[in-house]
Image (cartoon, rainbow, N blue to C red; front, side, top):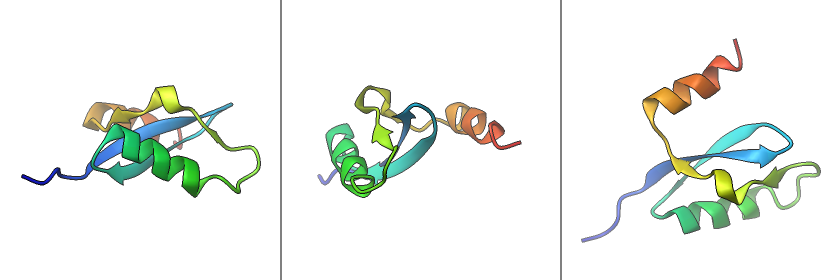
Length: 65
């Protein structure tokens, strides 16, 4: 049985957040590090990765209001 993609939320060291779709936490971390490798000032906080919950996501979105 193939693993399903999950949405992982994560933070950057120094502030900010984003998400990655991946089958595993390890895969999500690798994708994020590659995605932001050439972005000055954005360092992925590997310890912050977690599977998205509605409550967590809504709390993060509230930071924009």
